[in-house]
Image 1 (cartoon, rainbow over the protein chains, first blue to last red):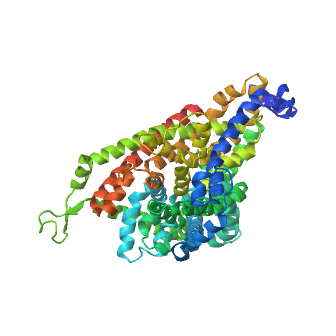
Image 2: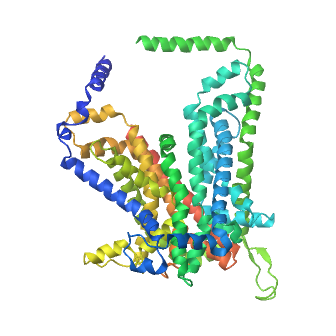
Image 3: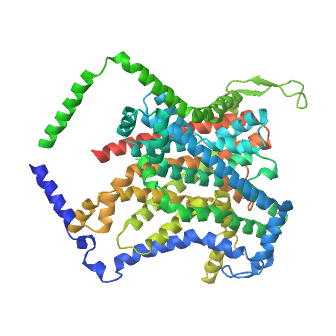
Length: 304
Length: 328
């Protein structure tokens, strides 16, 4: 009886006009309790935007201007920097950007597909060895990248894959965390009853997966793709270990190499800055445009 | 009460239906067919997992137990590898640079992880406040660095640490303050930590913020009606609610902290304060590729892997304790 009463009370509270949401003071414009949090958030925004804004201003400056003009003013050398950057090492910069796109798009697509199949199977079916596979995947999430990258390199060297596109693509195609996320998404968005209904209707397991499971999983798969794409774009250690041919470098390794040489050729500093500005444009645009399509609520659900 | 009755009726109905079902052995072929299908769906991922994870791990273990044979024609003789058991592990533990790099890693992690988690929680709580303004702008700004590769973040901050070109140093000297050079001496920890925090806070904030969004709002409204301030609501209602999510993001932060490589490697191109053995993974890289001593590198990286897994299990164990407390 008391339970019913409290439930009624709660229902009443939920139906109260929203005025309770904002205590009386809030209506009178900005109060002191709004200023402090807003100030902290704006200061944080300045901190997080600072290097990005700085790098775009600095990309417009010549070597001399970089050290002499105030930070947030435009220089005169934007076009020269871009021309010089794309001419550097016989026009390799465009190639490095292309490589980054190749590694990220192909790697993320493949790993999303593999994750979808494995995650769906783990979430929807009971079978022998399921627990062992789950434990193995969790172990894969916990392992330090370099622990794997060195033996991976040695193995790939032995079968002749080191210093090829495959050396970076193959390890990018499989991410235990992606499989785990697909598993969580499948459990959250594909009801088992639906599978059973499809089975009763005579649909084969494969057809059920394709026309019932995959469409329901799709928003989750978009999230996985985005996470993997950004992870692959940002990857440094794996290509750094796997590749020595500059032709195959992704943008991250190329920028490291460029700055590493900068000590002996100071002109490379302006090129590195211009390169950094260009290299972050695609991913930053990616993050900004697609942040509303992310289903990070489910990621956080998976972490509970 | 009536709902409960319906519930049991439904259960009873199902029970009678299972009785009607054909005997067990008739169902078994079905289940096996599903098992086959499940394995078929997983096959590509499993094959890749074996190639990319399992085989390298075993190979790494094998490498770590092997070493250059001694006295087989001196330093210039042919390189012979023999089984040396745990000798590589012993020499890792006897090496001072290993302990120094581990100490550096400890200092770095002990400062970085609490700061990362603390600021992420703070920003998530601020973004969740009904009165704060400019929220979607600051949320986007906070999240933006997530898209910036860590080497490029290190490159940009590296330049911002150079007093001659940094707006921060210019501003400070304009105000008559002389900032320390973050690329020298022990200040280099601050330099590295700043880059990592800049790149990591956004993702953690968004995860904790989305966890906050799932909180039952009527609870907060009730607290507000009772005259509870935002600070107390955050401390007594919101914080306990996000503790489980926070601990797991904390776990990922710890794993990330132990694996730090690209930021210090990039910054080391701008300073002498970071040497090639500053952090354990940098030392592993030096052993494997600069010293061409794969066996020692394998042993050290296995020590690190075991350490990481043990630490993660510790954090997960702590999490279970806390979640039990919260749900109780």
